[in-house]
Image: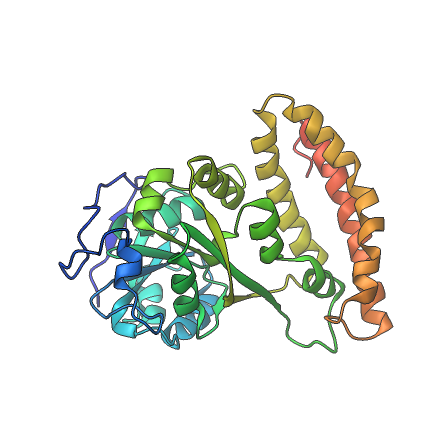
Length: 336
């Protein structure tokens, strides 16, 4: 059994040599260390270490599937490590080690939240490059190779997200809604300047310059925009694909959007004019359902009129609930 490490502090800022690669070779003038370490085919040599960081809390089945998917990567297995950053799951370390089965290093992070877990994983990572995904995700085989290849041309990268459902012929209303609207990472990256943390690539140098993920805010939006404001460039990798299971019930969706509302409100609240913008954003949410109705009717991701109608019903229910919850946050109430 691998030695268990304990981590209870945020990731420090470490300085790494700027010009020397892991293999001791010096990049050519004008060539980054990442570009230097890529082979002609787009794969890095086995001497270069990449750290895949997977935050986890109390989802052993999801973690087992995620690790199995990471073991199937086309990127050379000897060139990357996997770190499971567990948020002190009640199941305990023995159960975790049984599921991990030597495929990853286990780092227990007692500061609560996915952000601190990711920070804890990054702190102990040995890789020059960092790749983040989540324990309930299923990276496709070319995910790591495609994301790292795109990283050669920018400073941080978001990949393609795909919603997974158990049976496309028998979707629940929540699944149908998420199939159309969840994880639109191409739009997030290309138009909004951020990527979801379930599919994020960056270098250790950039991560340490930007700082770790913060808690209590929308951490993917916050981290990406801090990176952008520091002058770092985001890129999109359509071939770096990660699957994420759709929420199956209204209760699941309400939990998700209650958290996202609260986290996003924190980003608005402390900005000049932020409360007024939040009010306008909240009031327009019901109208946005009207604007998105044609998207549901025209999408090829759904089959049959019944599934489309169930998605439309969930769209209107979700936008009305988000509006009420957002106004509750503005009024200083919990909204739940």
